[in-house]
Length: 391
Image (cartoon, rainbow, N blue to C red; front, side, top):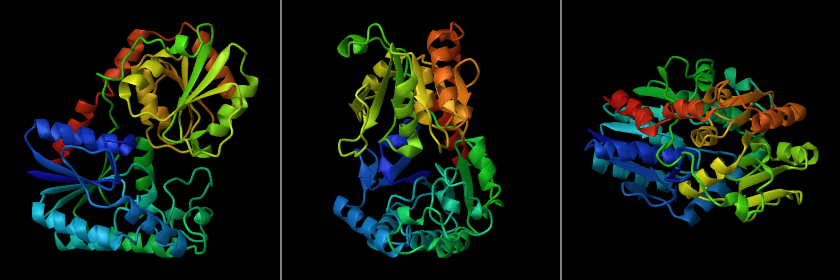
């Protein structure tokens, strides 16, 4: 068996780490496999088939013409040529909205080659909408029938709203395929079953993490930042924005007790977000060992997301023995239980404050419960489910 995975990234970010984890397990099993990607860290089985300049040009085309997902012709031509050379039995798709494919070219190729078993992990909702990967914040349900007059169109094009056209093109392209859909959460599975993809088989395979790396890890983090007598309230994101809950943290910084310290990891150097002086900001890091130390040092991990599928950061915090306070949105509540965290209504500032104080000061949580929950996140066990699916 030969397997090709296609994703925007490799070995970086949530989807990139999922691809890399599956690839590592396939390699251990002696299965020939490759990851096609366009950005991220180098990887032993990775094939980078686009330059940074090309990606910027394709992104610019999308912003001008509004045809997000239907550019990148030369990139996709290279990709298809490589698939023909490898002749895989299985192609596993992941994130296709990183300007890394031309959907029309790629899916017409799959229709001409039905012998390829096709799997597609939906890490968000983009595959069954005109434009958006998430729509909870805009409270839009047009995707159930037909996208049009998209409330988020300005995020994807400066001039045009082509959400109706793109929605219908996707609906046509994604039909009549030898396809199995995978979602990381039951929540997303439920949405797919309400979309134009409802007739496909939809499997739930939760994301996994490396529990050999994400585990309780001692460090001098508190001493380094003079936080010995503070309750550390931690947030981690791959770049902060309103969707990730940055506005919630700013509000919390005004009302949490003085002995509580908010620490945010992942703020990009070019971010235009102004943080209050009483929030400690730490840049983005791909060092899992360093992240494990920070998670472990925290008294509570807070994820006030307004849109998320099955957040990896929640799992990482639990695996490091830190209680999680997360929003009641998307698949986020599925990552914890009453023994490892607290779920709060979205944008409920007082609810987050009270939950954080309880998480930091209550004796309710035990390391044994965190360990038992963390075992369920073991990426090797989760990714084995993919290999079983391939067969």
